[in-house]
Length: 455
Image 1: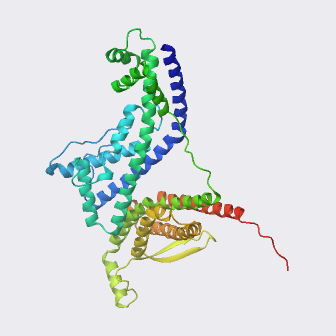
Image 2: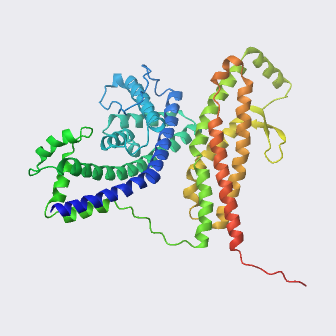
Image 3: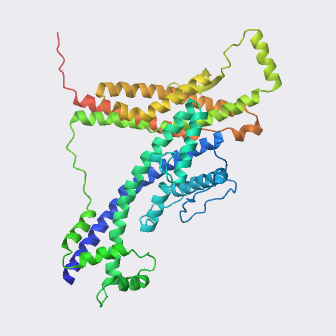
């Protein structure tokens, strides 16, 4: 029996080594991207809650310390404690997600069974997929009430931000849990291998749960003790354990997705769809810009409400030099990238914000809405999206500079810049144009040769 177990242990070690390489190079980077997306979506929603006053700033201003992830409080609270507890818990949740996304090392040595459990609990702290005022969990129930209130008091921009961020939180929760499950499968078998080599290898007595626990505390001091995994090892080592051993090895197999070789048409369509996906990826970015510009416009209008400004507007209205139904018209400047020409343009801010909000909604749903389109339709959609987004990008650059230039020095720190968001949009446009160029190049190669007929 020992030779059988030795052979199995060797196969298990080889399978774990191969899976570890796969996890490091493939799955961990994907998990990190999904965690970033989750944190970004929650941060946008939380910032909006603060802005609308449906939740307050953390009264204690506690900072998240680098180290182990801590799950915010989950105990119930009374109605009189609701506002304070919610402020504390959401601030803590925001800090912990920021810690996970931006300071945590995505390293398999650190992704132990216990840490994966902590991450899973943090991500599921609020059940985004089942937000309901009737939810059993008090945090989920209270967040559902906040969302309902925010939708009631918000405008079209609010609806767009809330819907986009909630959709992102639901999607990334599912994806994160998928990757955590994959990592957890590896961890369970790695723990069992360590148990075999560090505890059972030199055990002369008949192994029992209590005896293994006594020796594991000494041999594996950095690991928690998992009785259910010990039971699995004992089952695998039994005379009837061949099926259990085969199942364990099967769980570690890296099975490449068997995809039929796509036809040229499918490949070409995929290039266009990847371009569409790049456009869709900036939905939350546009929503974030809407929030920032809304704050900037309020700051600017507050400055303009000084007495001399009121008199000037009154004078202009009397002379009929300006009658725009209280619309904010801003004169912006930007450089045309094609020829380097400086362009001045008057922008109706309210109309542009409505357009930007509609664009964010469109980006959030564009992938799903174009999946059934054929190549010519996809190319037309992509071309239209490129032109529209390039135009919006130029106006966004101009508005960003305009807001910064129109406030005095003492208010400059209050202006919210959009440099990171502009960079995200620019990178997306670069990706879209790359996919479009590659599509046209491949399309030209696959076009049938037509000889020139001389007359």
